[in-house]
Length: 178
Image (cartoon, rainbow, N blue to C red; front, side):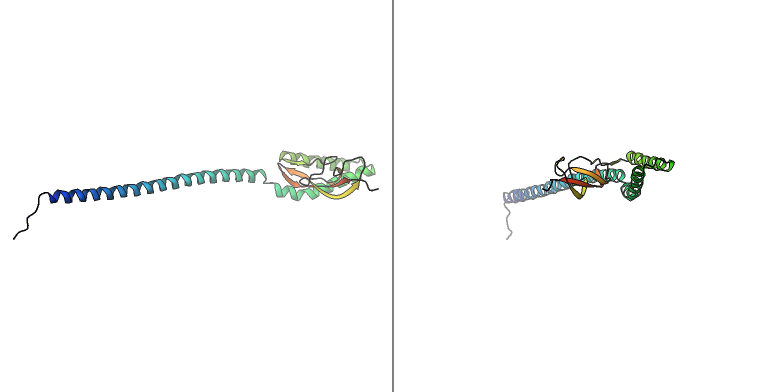
């Protein structure tokens, strides 16, 4: 006895197989689209990170170039202070010799070089005390000046562009004691 096949069964099985195959293909397509979206997001975020990295490197390089002379300028300040003290002592003694004039010229040249490299003296006298720019060394009682006003600069301070190279050492006014 041979088993008879029903001609209607074969197309039904084929249709079921096709439906399951289509469902499997749709699932694969959805998975592929999901991976594509993940990879696209990864590419976009990697590109953004790289662009930010490039900008940061350029910014850091510009800052490094801008402040390249920072430590050299810091090292030269004590010598500049000694020239300033020598001029103050000569002025107090009333000395106007060629030596004093030479020291004045050297000091002027150094300050000009500083200016060309973005280094300027902090103007502190008779200004309100600013802890970012000044270092208070002593207080002087005064009834003429408002409290916390710079009375006298003991050691000049310097700024390099927008950074403090060295704060000015100052004496500040305080309320008079009675």
